[in-house]
Image 1: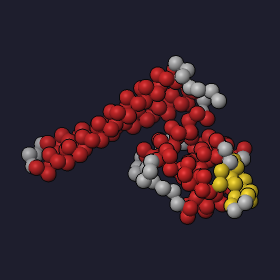
Image 2: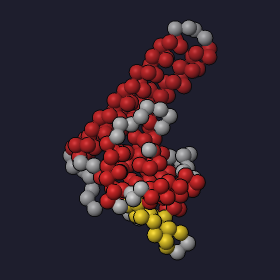
Image 3: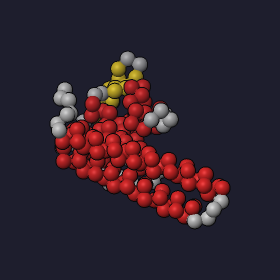
Image 4: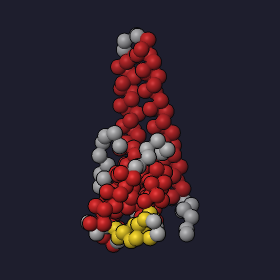
Length: 176
């Protein structure tokens, strides 16, 4: 789901070749999550077979262009609930990166869901800290400090969400 959504979201912007996609796919998830060509090209082939994209030869490679069926698939993926797991935050970042294609009400819904996710991170982290602090051991103290980082990061994300929502409410979105 994650890579498919990421590819389709990039193709919603403009047609791209594999190299352009690889560079673009890294942006929402950060510099340490490089998507390899071994993932990109088989995914492009699957999307083409499903009718979600068209692949056309161009120079040294192929250019991928999203189709109406691909736009429908993109919208369905954007509406899908985000599974809890190792890639939860990455999927949120991809959806946040592509949410300009959604109606404003859906953008607010996505931000509200992301806020709830951050609240869960804070609550879970605080429970772990409380459990560690119940036993006075040096390794527990260090572990609690590391977990505190999760809380600080989630709090910063909550501030970002509030700012983003305010900017959307005020209509500060630039128009192309």
